[in-house]
Amino acid sequence: MTKERAVLAYSGGLDTSVMIKWLIEMKDVEVIAMVGDVGQKRQDLDYIRQKAIDIGAIDCLVVDMREEFVNDFLTKALAANALYENKYPLVSALSRPLLAKHLVQTAAEYNANFVVHGCTGKGNDQVRFEVGATTLNPDLKVLAPVRDWDLLTREQEMDWAAAHGVPVPTTAAEPYSIDDNVWGRTIECGILEDPWVEPPEDIYELTQSPDMGPDLPQYVVVGFQAGVPCSLDGEPMSFYDIIMRLNEIGGLHGYGRIDMLENRLVGLKSREIYETPGALALIEAHKALEDMTLERDLLHYKLSVEHTWAIQVYYGQWYSPLKQALDAFIASTQPAVTGEVRLKFHKGTCLTVGRRSDYSLYDYGLATYGEQDSFDRSASKGFIDIYGLSVKTWARQQRKLGL
Ligand code: ARG
Image (cartoon, rainbow, N blue to C red):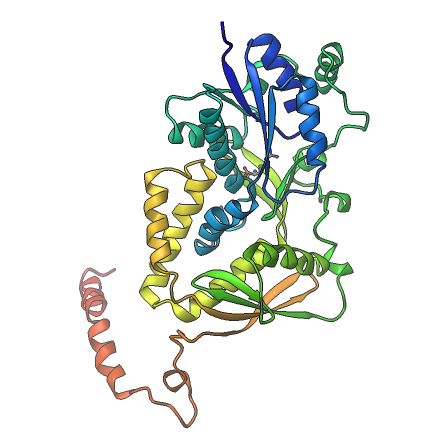
């Protein structure tokens, strides 16, 4: 009889390595491992691939998802100026639905009826993988071994691994839980679980401490075409390369650290540290260009759409009809978001200090208090009389009521 097959989102770490063996032994399935490259810190992908095969996977695919991540996910996130709870640029929340999509595709190619992830039972990522995968294919079954197995401590897991021929890491366990991709880096657990404790300096990799930043500020001009970053200091560059470069520049100036207590979907608050210099700088610049190119009421309305968009994506609803409809609205706002923004990095800050666009709605004549003033002030009086009429009438009534 042929065995059932499972496609596993594989990272090469201890959990998902043990998982390959565990699935084979405890679930009696054939395992196809899948590693997604979303711009995380360089790993030896050949080594990871071989490791999966050595443990017993029938195949291990290493998929370069960087272009797709930027084009289909980060472009939409930037257009939405996406910040969960006004702070977190959704680093992990953006990569999970992409990984889920590839799990589903690989499952179809290999005739597998299970997809598997290594998330714990109290985070957001489990929701994003599962809701993402089952929205794309409602017939798929999902396995989440970490939620089920009784290898509670790392020692138990290492013992199980050693007893079953799974290579055991020789280095000490990382005291933090870390996830990263081109949009940034997330750090949680360990000492950070005490919300009063200042994060130790050694948790940071992308950013140096703001007070260690250069004494002189650095200026960078970011170019946008229809909402998508397309150049740096006038030189055409891919969105991916622009993020990488701004990660470097922002990181050098100590910009892009976030220390927040956030509300997880499963109902608990958790303390999270992020380093996202490139993402935050691009959102800053993108907003500045929208301030110049979007009509007032559209801009105001878009703010509420952005808020809902970020919550949907954080909650694992990347493929939901609401999120898709919001994307369509947001996309319709972007054609005029073309132009350049000048950013100034210095000692932990990134400020917009200039913006220009061929589609600017900023009218010098209307704005200036100088000689070229073209604003018709005489129209203001009548406008204010009528605009304020309703509340003025109400105020008289309140007075009658003695309120
Ligand atoms: N709290 C963040 C989020 O929910 C980061 C999650 C990081 N994931 C991880 N497995 N370490 O998006």
